[in-house]
Image (cartoon, rainbow, N blue to C red; front, top):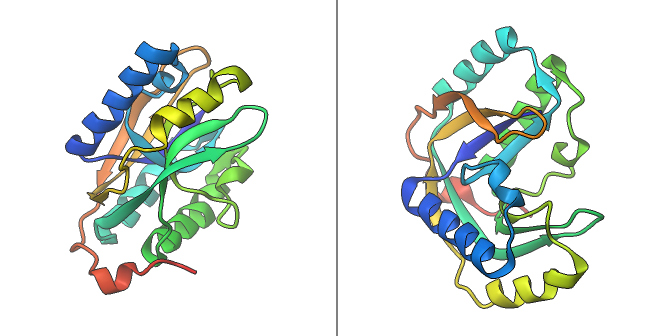
Length: 191
């Protein structure tokens, strides 16, 4: 499996990793650590054609400005394998970049996850998945639900994570976003 993600800045990455450690200590949760990078995903696929992927991501990153990203507290993504995450507020610049990534990279990918289709995409920073159960869900939400997790950060990269079954994800490629920081007026929340 492979994915296009943005790694969080160091200050926020360390806060996310501290939450992972806390959830491991109190609830034994370790599934999220299969991807040992504090990040959010733009697209997940079975496999990319790396010969085509590299120039596309390089070109997009070269002309894309770093993005202001705001979080909005705890999200619960329900289903047979629930995910507990820090939700990210969708803004017009985030939506535009995600749509471009979807449209350009889907053509060079095998089995793109429909959860990352622009109409379905819910950007989030994973805190717990794989080992969230009916038995531990309410206690985890109770633990995290009163935390002030409304953050604002600047995202300055597109990165590629690759994961072989049963192994932790590895950082394959990373591209800095090279434009000027997007102005607040351009970062209005999408309706």
